[in-house]
Image (cartoon, rainbow, N blue to C red):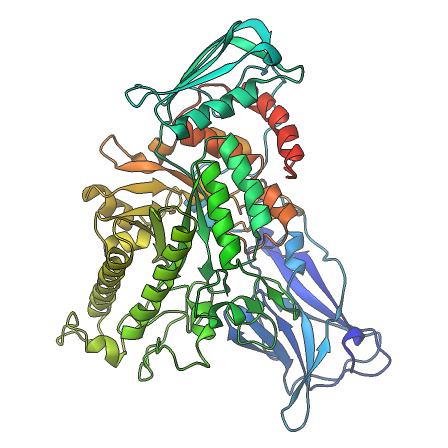
Length: 637
């Protein structure tokens, strides 16, 4: 058998009660019958509904293979066979076809030989007319599945994104060439900045250099193609302290050049923080001194392991990371735009890449060898949690944090914010770990067959981990503010801030705890601010539609402080959009997902509700799309 003998194609058919059925069609396009003794690998969690013909084996996460069982009969040349498979999030979407298929051959001794990738055909899809992920309406009441037609174009030459608190611009203009600019820094100014344009000059008065930079962004947007400026005054201040974007570079790596383009765009729209996800189950993406394993192993995925393909990637090696000098350069570049980079490495969960990096080394003991706990993470991993009872877990964390701080020191910048993850730790982790049982916080009367005691033990161990991590940060980098995802709030305290990513109708336990205890938090609502969601429900629209369909108008109309019925006592420090990169494979796709939606995020970060209407904002986006194009970005049209 050779790989090209096998032809694969997904076929959707209409079942009863509006149910759509999905099958994988296997065709022999070779010249000899296809016997048993081969495996079809995938990296997107393919699940046959009937395992009589194929046995399904998961190797790691959603990566695994289908192998013909003893019931398999030889497939003659030209013949086809269909196996029904479980529908997943990509039902009705072309991304269904991206499974990362490749074939291996198994010999009589059990040896495995790589054959290559099979041939594939385009999927036959049923029209995507209704939401097939039934959880979306439950999470996002009133979800809209298609985009509204664009509003009529209106004059928008004097419109600034995000819209200023107060703007009185006249119809008169003056040539930029004849206007001199003066800048005054006045820490006592009540506003962030004031921008006044007269026939005799441009005056910028600002609380700080950072605020003067914001004024200059407004000025740049007011310039017309003829280099004219409108006369008048702009008085402005942000509604939120934290106006941020999170970019995951762990699932699929994106380099410093791409990130700089995004930072340039963020600066124009007065966003001030970029949280950079440098680690997750699928990769570690930042060089750390004296820990080459993290990038030699943790930054590479291939079918040979130890880090395996994921999210539809095939057998080829997928690799990449930021070198120390590249990260330092990125820090310094962002600082020129008055943007703070917040590094995030995720512990204790989502640590698969980190753990695999040290499997073959004896430098750190991160897993209790006597731990018999069983768990499976939301992404299918059975071994992706750092053991919180092992001293080496914290020795490693301290080494990483110290080296990250050293990079900030080399950049001559403070590490003001550090994000430590803390989300999606699977139930069952550590409960049978002798190392955890020996901790002083463990209660000997706990019975690990009782769900209440299991929950109490997990909460106690998470709180222990939180305390250890904060002690490390205070020791290594005094004054650095720590952030976590909202799950950690149940085990943390007011020394940290929390990104609340739950959906409109998500589980409020952590949020209610945050509100009750007056903890500071960032609105990161997945129903409106997860930019890896598709813009609309369409077969060719890219994205991972587990929470919502989110277009630019949805974000523009989103009122952050009305979500989750928040009141004036909520300690909201800002909003943050998230771009997870499970399906963001290229720079062009990153541009597509971010723009123009990020402009609406910036608007909501500056103003709780709109100072301009949707038609004016939309018309202004047309102008800004041209600017983004000149920057080298490719927004969705």
